[in-house]
Image 1 (cartoon, helix red, strand yellow):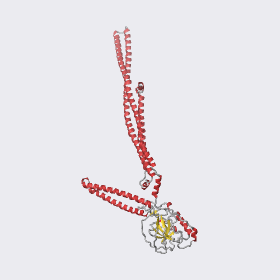
Image 2 (cartoon, rainbow, N blue to C red):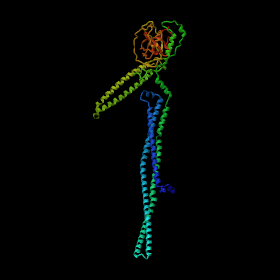
Image 3 (spheres, helix red, strand yellow):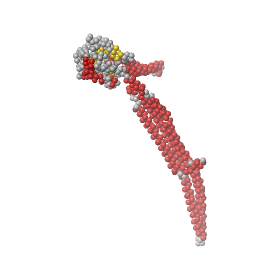
Image 4 (cartoon, rainbow, N blue to C red):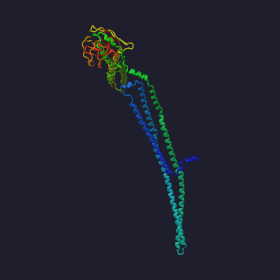
Length: 570
């Protein structure tokens, strides 16, 4: 165990100072590389969250009338839930980016600075110790070279002395001088030896301390620093995974919300809502009567019977093809009048009721504000130091005016709603009985007929709907079935004049904006020149000069007894 520990110690590579310096520098660069990686991931999360939020905002329902319409359907509500959950899902990616920044990027940035400082300190100490040992080595080498030089000088001085001493021709003084020079050289050599020995001992001691104490300590600090760096990197990698894991429960809830929204879709309920949204209150036309052309040819032609039956039927048949109201587009565009009279009865009733609910909510809101301001005024009256009571009066007056205006609006819409509900047929009343009426022409005998599908709104051949308030008009001209030929609109310019087969009385006002129709007032008397062929329209004539189609359910028809088909199709 000790051998394994010693083998993993950096002191075993104390001679690899330069390589360790390179390795630790690479470790710091690698940590910085990982920091940049996390930073880029954080930026990706932020951009992704931003794009997800923009996507959710882009497909959110707009603040218009269509939003209210979409909220009725379960699949639209489910999609709205998906968009809201997607917005929350984007928020979790923002949380990921925030946690990556705070828990990893910021921490590693600070740690990198401390790590660089610590590494610089350790290698500075190492280089200082290295320089010191190198300096000691140089001093030792200098002492060694000086000792070697002094020894050689001493040997030469000794040899010179011996030659002088053996030469008989040399004076005694010269011999003495050579002897002293040799002794001086020997002394210098002895001093150099002592100095060299001292420096050698000192160097060996310093070298031993350098390689076994100073450098191992520095390397141990570098090893601890490197291990801490690696450990910190591992902790950051674990935190990186934990940041994602922490948001998984909320992300799962977002996905569960999307799933729950999808499971809440009810196709049957949506189909039923389509009926509720577009239910007009009108009933479809009755059966088309069988036309017996053989019997028609045997009839006696009179002023009160149909003439040119074949041509009339062909033209009437051509007209009826374009008047089957369920399949005709509405040409009226725009939001329509304030009373929603452009809508069918059922839809008009719903719109009026919704408008009343909105007005009542506004009134309640204004009343709540009025009550709050009244209480505030009472407080000011009791405690004048808190405020001036008269400062509230302008706002109270403004609210009172607003409430009065809203109440007048409520009364107006309630009147329209009462009118619609009064005109709408009850479920048990599927037939409206017609009564006798008097006209200025005593030759016409009205007959009571049943007229079902009582409609409170006019339906024109192109599918548009209009409605006016009830108005009573007086019959200003007597009905004359033997009048001359009137001047028709463009639609009837190429047709022969049709004889009258009966009369009718308008039960409701009809504006007749569309081509081929004729406007009538409530209570007006008209001639019938063509029966309802099952498409819900009757052709009538007024005062010898105007003719056109009116909804069969808007008139009470009285056919002559000798006229063919003395009944209407409703």
